[in-house]
Amino acid sequence: MAVDELIGLLKALETVGASAMRAASGAEALEALRTEYLGRKGRITAILRRLGELSAEEKPVVGAEANRVKAALDALLTERETAFAGTANEGPRVDLTLPGRARWRGGVHPVTLVIDEICDIFRDLGFSRVAGPEVETVDYNFSKLNTPLDHPAADMHDTFYLQDGVVLRTHTSPAQAHVMEHFQPPVRVVVPGMVYRRDPYDASHAPAFAQLEGLAVDEGITFADFKATISEFVRRFFGADAKTRFRPSFFPFTEPSAEVDVSCRICAGAGCSACKHTGWMEIMGSGMVHPNVFEAVGYDPEKYTGYAFGMGPGRIALQRYKLPDIRLLYEGDMRFLGQFA
Image (cartoon, rainbow, N blue to C red; front, side, top):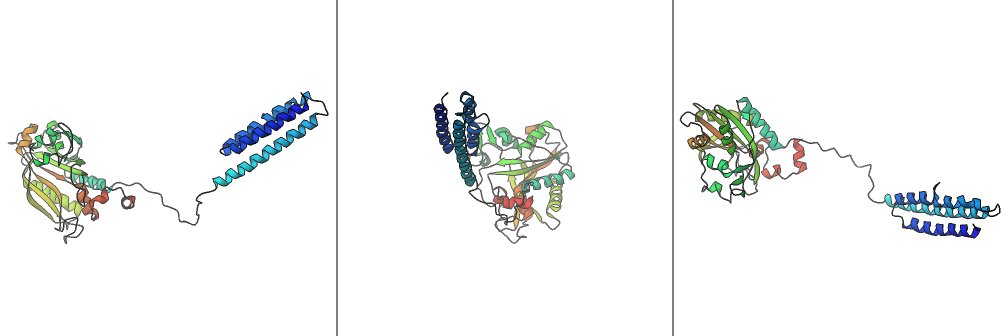
């Protein structure tokens, strides 16, 4: 092969290689081009292998041209690598004088802490912890609990209806019917879980919140037994100085019915936004199980009596941790929740 032809190949290789190196998009692409053109099995080496076809006088001429092309491409590669390295170093730098950030620690949510503590107290009082479904039929959510479907609580402005006959449960009370249908007295259970209502989102209400149901059924249970149980719970949970009051009320599934209030732990009874300036915080609705509920689940109302109660752990958490607004528990602000970790 003629000397001119090999030198022409080297110059063409220089032109094509330089163009590819200038168009390279990053350091990895440049390294691939280095291997392609300057590597031991690269394109320049392939041309040099043909020096054997030349005479002794022609070899130095082609070799010199090959070294020049190799040096030119190597210099261009170095220049482009330096440019990419400078770009990589641009942007925010690490300020080693800044104090280090503490690692976030996981923790149990304050409402869950309250639920667990309540369940532990009632466990000591002979209650078992059970769970119920969050999606219920209208029958279990209302009818089996002596609540007619024309009752305001069953209206669509209060209840989330998923389809005909199916709702997001508005309370944990349907678990009463499930438990009583599967177990004969004596029965003592607590049922924590989420419930859903079309309530406003304000300092003391939320449309989705935790509730805890309690049920005790046996022969000879009286309202005095209920008051003694709840008073013991309040004493153990809130402290010996906590005051309790029972106010007459109405619930379709209990008779007689009562609402239970605890003296506000946030304002010590002086009145605040959380207790609506009354000095009292309602913690549960309750009462003696209605005979119609017993009949709906197959219990003999002439033989058995019992009491039921439903409380909001979120509101109780307000009392326990002296929080002014229930929305703090649901907004996911890590600055607030991190205090409980």
